[in-house]
Amino acid sequence: MAAFVDRVVLHVTAGDGGNGCASIRREKFKPLAGPDGANGGHGGDVILEVDPSTTTLLAYHHAPHQRAPKGDFGKGDMRAGAHGEDLILPVPEGTVVTTKDGTVLADLVGAGSRFVAARGGSGGLGNAALSSRTRKAPGFALLGEPGEERTLVLELKTVADVALVGFPSAGKSSLIAAMSAARPKIADYPFTTLTPNLGVVEAGQYRYTVADVPGLIPGASEGKGLGLDFLRHIERCHVIAHVLDAAALESDRDPVTDLAIIEEELRAYADRLDEGLDLDAEGRVPLMKRPSVIVLNKTDLPDGQDMADMVRERLADRGVPIVEVSAVSRKGLRELEFLLGSLVEEARASLPEPAAAPIVLTPAAVDEKPFSVVKDQYDGAVAYRVTGSKPERWVRQTDFTNDEAVGYLADRLNRLGVEDQLYKAGAVAGDTVVIGPDEDAVVFDWEPTLMGGAEHLGRRGTDERLEDHSRPTREAKRAEQKARTAERLGRIAAMDEERRSGHWTDPSVEQPARPDESGR
Image 1 (cartoon, rainbow, N blue to C red):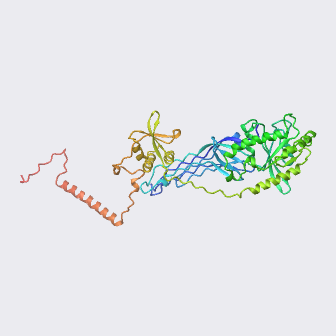
Image 2: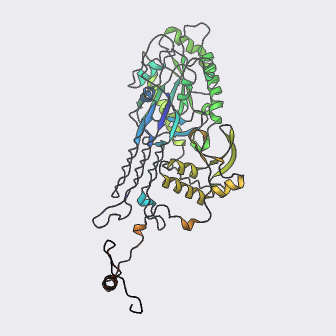
Image 3: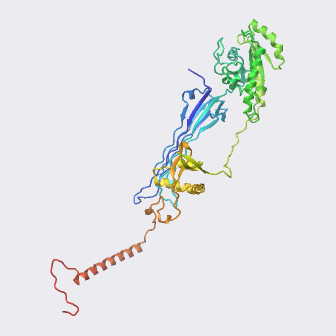
């Protein structure tokens, strides 16, 4: 089973925002005391953070899907929903975050460096936050927004001061084991080192890290052998140490030829690397111009010492320091440690002073439109597609099972000017309107907002029982009571007069004839 992974594809999903609450406050003698639905909580973010104790991306190789907690929903009595906690994902120092197409999003160097990989959704507003002078008792709330989903590529580029470069079985692992406390796997066959090994070297006043990376073969810059798995681990080093096998068993190999092949592969890789880097802004020296040291290894063997004597003059023409060492007998190791320490110290001194990252504000362009309406095809028919951050966000927040919420969405779109643009685009009542991209679009038949007769309609989200706030005075109550009493007494007197005049008769009893006006 793999114990070291330096490249993974990570799928991250931030937490969804909680839904808002639609609630009406109820108190004694106040059955409808106004809206008190609170907002939902925001969803948690997914954050990548550099952790010095993390050295590999193995955890995300086994668990490539990471999701942050979602926010809680709002409740009545103005109880807001809890926010979802951020999901912190520890990554090693030197992790580069890119998209699947290779766009660099972050280069995480330094303990505690952070990158927000996915942002959580905002919580929906409750009806208390949606109330206004014209909408005093909304019977709906907004839904929480879904969290952001992204697919990222994490690539680890080892952060070391010195990189040991050489052919397989050149003795790099033996050197780092002799110079530091690192204990890499050592064997007498090629490609023993399949993962980078880091070791800390202390020599007098110098303290620096050395990286033993997988061996290099011809064509590595094109991906042969371990190829790019090796080369990306030397991008951040200050000094390159070329480890040459002075006692190679192959008859067609010698230190001079090996060095030429290694430099050619580094040059091919550097041409591609430096094109995509702003070296001046990052303070880095181009790869081929960085300080280097030639290390002739295995000189404790007779053949190794003889080969070192033969090629010393030819290698000296390059103007690069040459050190003859042996990891077994520890010959020349102290000299090599101090030489590398001095070169690292000079490279560090030449770096620019670290400065705080500037705060970059990116306001929207003056002529940027909040939305656009285009004529499009949907399901084989003509449709009008509305795209824009605001309309798409409002659609996601709308509960389409609530007619009042749908009306509120229509009002927002109308105020934004969507209906005017639909008219200009040629849309008529009944045409198909699509809001959002194809993957998550809302489709409906357009019905324009009524422009006249609105005074005959009840205002959306209001309650007439809450409109009258006047209270009659005691004198008004007494006057009203006297008027009702007088009206009642008048009705009783009228009924008595009718009874006395004989207007009230029993139909089952024969009544005597009433005299006419002449008395007969």
